[in-house]
Length: 389
Image (cartoon, rainbow, N blue to C red):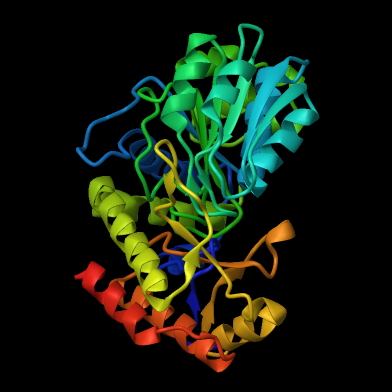
């Protein structure tokens, strides 16, 4: 692989040399004081990320706990649902993309699910959400940043609806937390989930959850899968441990990556992600391309992931375009499920520099030229450069 190979796909994202070095340190026991120190470092930094993801430096939650899991965010999503409705209940699942659908499929295994669905890439109907959520609703699930399409969903509005009916609100913040604003108490979020390999810029394989005190009281670990008993995880976290064998190198990498976020500062990190995502959007529209998602008054474009429709002639052989991108040492992603061959997606999650964003724009423009698409590459690069100044 090229030394300068650039990951611009929506996870895994590039990790720093310091993260890689931390993972290569000599092995220690996962029951040692040395590992407990690693867990504590990671947990302290994650507490900051979960509770201070604001532009003004305010703290949005104070009574909860961060937990780290030996598994990706799908495990954390299942743990949240299973511990809240593992013995049955009523869940309202909001779906306007692949990961909203995944949350619904998880909930289907544990509860009666009423899905509020929208076409992928379009906004959810908040009136339909209000109609679906009632006093019998136990849990509402929602994806904040729908990575399959490039939309930022209105967690604040849905949180108000859930709170009106005393429903627990569980939010997939996998590709927003650590890169964009997230306000736990203000948005009435009970459980928030994120993943190491996204905005946290850590290696794939671990994930994290923030559970408020009220959510913790509602957990029923006996109703959940043995490995995902959150009562057990909470007890072990008090001594900076996990219930089972921890992936020591991954926890080390996560600790360093999360501490890097503390050093940068969440306000600065949010502003950087928003500037870079705007640069991608403006670059691709300047090239003559169309953004895939449709926003409205309640739903915005993602600030960590940009979805773009492929030109009609490129859709005839999309692999040629993606191959031309990869040949230049850059990785981007296509569409998922029925959107395969219809769109491409490019990420600005993690610690990317302005130069890397510009390289991505130029590479994509050159790849389109290779396959004969009518794009204005230089206009795209200029638009991105102007936004990144």
